[in-house]
Length: 409
Image (cartoon, rainbow, N blue to C red; front, side):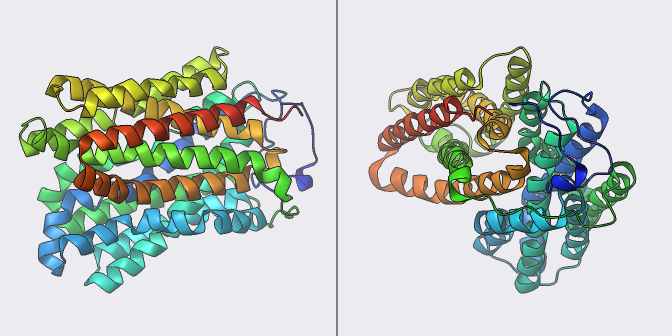
């Protein structure tokens, strides 16, 4: 990436009072990056905090499982529908202010969710929470990119790519422990306090500017070609890997004769393997490994899928194969976030690029599980393997292609 200095007023995506690191001329501010990451993890609690107390909520509010599913998926639905429009709003408001506003919205929505009395209010609150979550997930990597020097930027963004599985893991663990003790309303009330505390800390420490940062012109269509291709690859890969994890408990129970409860618990553990995968990618990028080579490692998911879902396989083989898929999922997500600054024409376009990544990634996460469930139901698990392998080949190939054509300056 070509070193460049700009006046603060010429950086529409920058909304911090702290001078950002540009091209390695300023040391990377790892403490503030850690704060931004923790905020992302806390925002990601929104994705898993209802599932852990689902039975209590359905009984208390008179919801069906389908209705609870809609409430759980509403947050991701907002991202799938409004990622790009939200990035334009952030472009006008400034990343720092949008980040704080998103955290506050997540906190307020969490408190309101604890007081929900029915499906309509619950869905409405979750949509509001989804908007806050979307602001955090778009503004977060934009802030990190400006807080990191050029040498550290890929590593910092790769670490950011682990915030979703970490957040879901924390919410699952904490909800499982606190939900039975406090009830679902008590657990959601506790979960609402964390983003509120981080909102105050972020406002005091990052100090978003009091005045709105001047906005830049919307990037011309040609400037968005790279981010659009990167986001499309991410959509395909998110669709595949999430679908594999969602269907794995059913396959282990029906196809491998495992206990249903044990299969679900095992899948939860397997899904967390993506976190060390993301950290491994960050370490390798730090050591100078090419993002293209890391992207190509996704091809290991093809034999892993066969091992996981093959007709005559074993339970142990399925677990090993699914573990490889989860590990590669973490690596590829990290590569997408680390690679985005390499394919935009300017760091000022990161907000729009992040909006595309959020929207298409969420779209894949929404569409994938029902689509793959339909394939497995109609054509069998063996057909699912063929679809998965074809998708991996196209997604990994597209990701490698767009990263190999990174901008030269």
